[in-house]
Amino acid sequence: MERVPVLKIGDILLVSIQIDMEDQVALQLQEDLADRIVATGCHGVIIDISALDIVDSFVGRTLATIASISRVLDAETVVVGMRPAVAITLVELGLSLPGIRTALNVDLGMELLAAARAEAEGGAGHEDTDEPAVTAP
Amino acid sequence: MALSSDRSGRFADLLKGHEDAIVASWTDAVAASLRGRLSQAELYRQASELQRGFQAAFDGGAQDLEDDAAAELRAQLSELSSTRARQGFTANETAVSVFTLKDAVLRVLDEGEGADAAVLREYVAFSSFVDRAGLFTFDSYTRAREELIADQAEQLLELSTPVVKLWEGVVAVPLVGTLDSARAQVVMERLLETLVETGSPYAIIDITGVPAVDTQVAQHILKTVVAARLMGADCIISGIRPQIAQTIVALGIEFGDIATKSSLADALRHVLRMTGDKVAQKPRREG
Image (cartoon, rainbow over all chains, first blue to last red):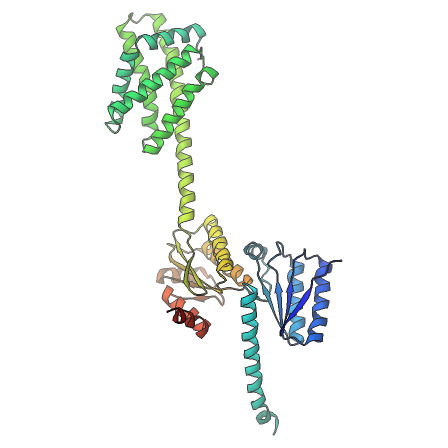
């Protein structure tokens, strides 16, 4: 069975899907990604689907599941490079891929992740200072 | 009523024998019906070409307009029709240009060997042939007109959906005119493609030029916004006139969490605020 490679770039895992997303491939990717996030400790996942002509409801759901799994593992997922035709088809089918962050291309996806990370860390730092005041008494 | 072959031969002789007289009186009749919108010389040229076309058709033994011998004549007629259609003449005026040939021939017959029964019968047969030719021009005229309309509709579609870059990372679509399904589809595709090409994460859909927004139009706009979101771009709807806002509320159309602004300037300001320094810096660096 074909596998989708998962590349580590800095703090980000990059997945570029270049083959047909069959159900088994999608499930395998889901497992691989979960393993890699834990193994590498990355905080961001970018899934590039610019080579995909078809995104069906199963692939859509798998992408949402991957996003949820990585969020549990403290990694933000961004789906990038969706083709206009794919977007139009999804809208016509009434699939809005809830829970998935999207960006136009890998560049913007990385920016989005960096912004999200900065926000999360800023927020976390803020929480840390607040924490003693709330929990101490 | 089909012509017999010897009859068509006689018509060919008749047309050939009185060529100048027929063409002259035909030109006069057509000129009268068009009231000077085409020059006499132009009409004369057309009339003599058509006259030769009829003559050749009859010479070839054409018994009906669908015959092979009349192929040349058919081509001439459709050429004439499409020229007239493009010049803006009515179908009526175009067909009359052919029908007046009957008057011209009748005049020649009158001057010649008196109106006896045989001549009359022949004239009626000839007349029905010309009628078919006239109807043929009608058909070609309509076809030419429809092609013209289809072409224009296509051009309009192309013209009316520009996607312009407003700022670094911001594109805008100023919609002008009624938004039907076909146009909405074109706008949607054009916008999404531009988003990908330019890598702009923000799009402003300006509906200042849309005369009315009903549920269908709103549906089209919403679909475009959702599709853009799926791709990772955010859309803002701007140019909502007070009347349109009232209609939108009266119809119960929900734009949900899509940002709507009353003017394009507001929308641009909104986008710039959202992108913060990142976008605002770029023009400064260039300047």
